[in-house]
Amino acid sequence: MKQAQPNGHVRKRTLSSVITSQLRQRITDGTYPPGSQLNEVEIAKQFSTSRGPVREGMQRLVQEGLLVSHPHRGVFVPVLTYDDVKDLLLARAAIERAAMLELSRRGLPAATIASLEQVLGQMAVAIDNGDWSGVASADLQFHEEIVHAAGSPRLSRMYGALIGEARLGINILVSSMDGRSDYLEEHRRIFDMLTNGDRQALLAELDRHIGVGLRTIRHELGADQEGPEADLEPYVGTEPSTR
Image (cartoon, one colour):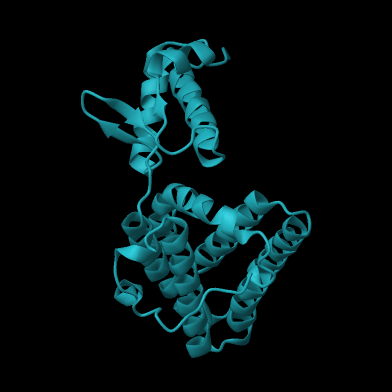
């Protein structure tokens, strides 16, 4: 039997996926910093391809929130404001809270316990090495594992739609992580409360965790002078960790 050969459309889609992945990595690792304009022609030259696959890749990243398209101006890496990050954390918290409620009801699968322990180990190593970008990656992976463990395809899909922007948001926190001795402990507390089934303590810890992140980002973005902290409700009772 004659083996079927991939047609041009399939090859184009595969190339577009590769380009999308590479551009996503460059955006999240800071190679393309916030505010950078992506040049379709230049990127096509870098990948030795036509502009079509590059355009497809950029459109996908616009959908993920990793790029923004301005008519007659071009495509840029977004510069997140405090309000952007606050809104992002609000959406993330809603999904994570739903996932945690489901997990507290039916228990944490053994495979998830093992995965979370592994991520916490990676976070500990990254902290010891002063690899704060690695800490940020482990942070996101920890929360992703929790959402996926709930076994809800829709929660996972909604969370996946936010993860690109979440990577941009957590990049803002990287410079503030250095010297935070209790960053790992915050995540260990969430892990312990997930495994022991203390629902109310778990949700309170999630709120506290979000509040610390909001306060830190507010400070890092210079939003402290923009008004009272009423916009941090219901997290106003939380305090950022001592550095």
